[in-house]
Image (cartoon, rainbow, N blue to C red; front, side, top):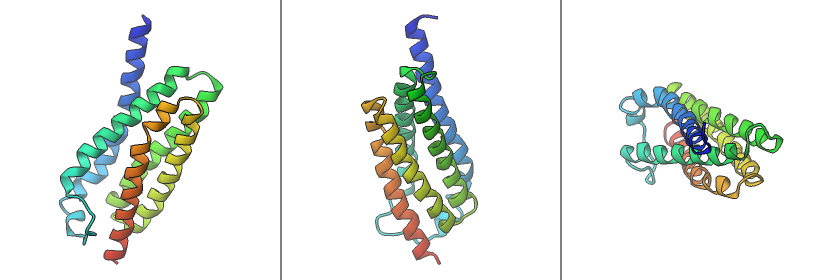
Length: 161
């Protein structure tokens, strides 16, 4: 396999892993949007529902490209293994948040999950920065969006006791 083919395969695999997380999360999210979520009182800063899908699609794409830059350094190298594990944990927490918030329809459990997710994204960025500054920077929009989503989650908890 040529080095160009190897790079392309690694890029596709990294993006696919993140898109699979998106698909898994959507299993819990999609059915709840027109039913449970539609009935919630929302804060003034809540964007319209159509905004979420394109934003998350872009964020998952950026996550995949970021992971690609880390894996490209060499997944077998010790300095790369730890950041990849941390990335995997935050990706699992991302899916878990969808389950807690939408699947269980619990803003309280969702808030706990999203705070843990935000912390893990910070740890992912710090660990990625040691390997690839670009990979770390690609995760900043994700961190910002999850910060905003944390606010929305908290506001939904307060507005819907």
